[in-house]
Amino acid sequence: MKRVLIFGGTGHMGAAIKRHLDPTEYKITVVTRNPKSADDIHWDARTLGPWADALDGAEVVMNLAGRRVHCRYNEANKKEMMDSRILSTRILGEAISQCPNPPKVWLQASTATLYAHTFGPANDDITGVMAGSEPDAPAAWKYSIEIGKRWEDELNKAVTPNTRKVAMRTAIMMGIDKESALDVFSGLTRKGLGGRLASGKQWVSWVHELDMVRAIQFLIESDLEGPVNIASPNPLPQAEFAKELRQAWGIPFGLPATPWMIAIGAWFMDGDSEIVLKSRRVVPKRLTDAGFQFQFPEFGPAVQDLVAKMRQA
Image 1 (cartoon, rainbow, N blue to C red):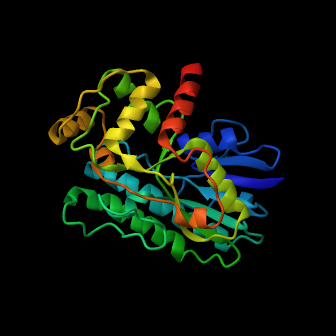
Image 2: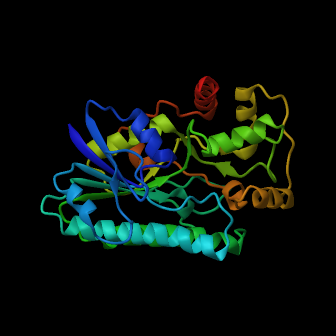
């Protein structure tokens, strides 16, 4: 049985991993600032401590630590989003570099926000256009891009010659947990607010939680390293995304919203409009080239499956 350490494993992604990763093959231990069970290990995500001893002999380490991005982008929150990712990655790299018997693979959370805001061809993880110079992208989006770049820089700077490193550039994970992205979108949809946002032409990249975990298992067993996109091979325009979500919930209509309405709504929901206005058209070329097959490649069947599970919860 492979021993897996999940740093920052108390969020939605950690919950999905624990829900779907085969317990007969993997023994999961969560390392967190807020232990919730007797098996959890405490760390402060900034300094070396007794938690580092758990790395010795582990097969896999996953770092999912980082302040959630669904928040208002004020200076305090932006600093916390940056620091929580950079410092946790940096100290984990130091711990692995000093480990007598280091993990074989380090799967590091990253983000598809690193790719350009585009209405044109999709961005893959081999030839994709990186974000930062798009003429139609608001300057306010640059901070999210800077977080992503510095996040991966910390991973790349870590000296871990005996540990294979993978930067998981994830799209929006569609999961069944409360307060997850799909739960928020579903709440708006059920209130009749799940219509076209702005032009509705902006691309939405997404991945079903089961395929997210299946991709993680594939990465553990494969020899892939470096940046890997974890996203459905079929992103879709936001208007189609909203239509499929309405159909899954049986909601006949959804009010559209202009950019200024979205900005106001995001403020009241303690969020930022970038999450829904940035056009993310990201595809997983390295995964599919390596032979990975998605169980839910299309959004319609994926959201029908997830909504059915949410209804049962």
